[in-house]
Length: 336
Ligand SMILES: Nc1ncnc2c1ncn2[C@@H]1O[C@H](COP(=O)(O)OP(=O)(O)OP(=O)(O)O)[C@@H](O)[C@H]1O
Ligand SMILES: [Mg+2]
Image 1 (spheres, rainbow, N blue to C red):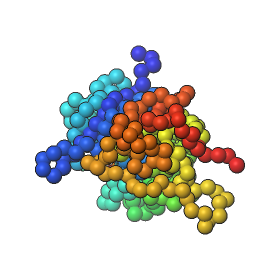
Image 2: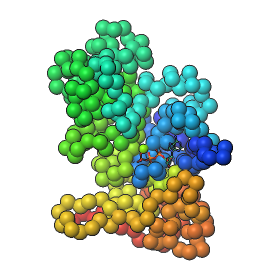
Image 3: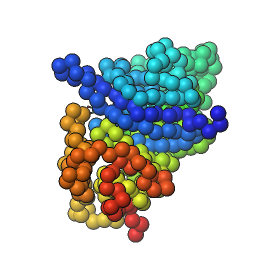
Image 4: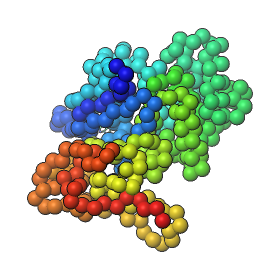
């Protein structure tokens, strides 16, 4: 099948055990597709469910005792949710790669970076020692570590934060995954290093054709890197559209609120950002009706606090989970 998306997530729900033997849903109704070579972003405030969604795709929610309770995840046409762990292990590495949210802690301080990359390709691709080392050097070079042939024998503590992040990217990309999930890969880094890592991811994507699911709380970052943006709130996708539409023509008040909170260059520092008042409700405390209604300046009593919005088409590329999207006018980013 030619036009089949590489990844298709349908009505995904994930729960974690809560007090009293209950299962608490933390992600619900999540649906999206990702094409071969496409880049899409999952964006939202802390706790919205970005990492849990990513871990579900990797088959890793069980590690922290979570469970996929509904929906399906197909990768290259194959249903993943019912796979036994043994099969997941075969996919992680050569098919599904993930850069985790706290990458620096994922490197083992006791082994050289070369040994760690080599170990990954030996395990997943079955390369012998010599070829695995050559692959490690090649990958360090690809992620633009200077003097890769020497630095391959260094330990993680001899690398800066930005360099460790490059090593993590090298380790994941060494197995040639078809899907790369990058969970907040630049959050711990300072702004200039951040920009270089984003440039690197963009270049790697162009060179390798890997499909990229980029996870971030920063809309400004993802709009630059990704073709499509999916905005998450309280365990659901509330808006999905092309990066340009999300940025300039948002259809959900939450997206518009996030855009208003992006710092604008040239604004006087004493101008306060228009942050969204209130905070994201925790799982188990999601309000009835639209989950955003109690923070929404456009809410209509009797509608938004009653009806549950579905994700519906709202423009050429947009889908939105807002009951009032046709009646309201939302501000995107304005170009001065
Ligand atoms: N192992 C777990 N057990 C119980 N609840 C969990 C577990 N992991 C995540 N959660 C809950 O699921 C919700 C979504 O968490 P998730 O880590 O996906 O958020 P996130 O969008 O990645 O946030 P951040 O931007 O802080 O990384 C949160 O309320 C979190 O507390
Ligand atoms: Mg996270």
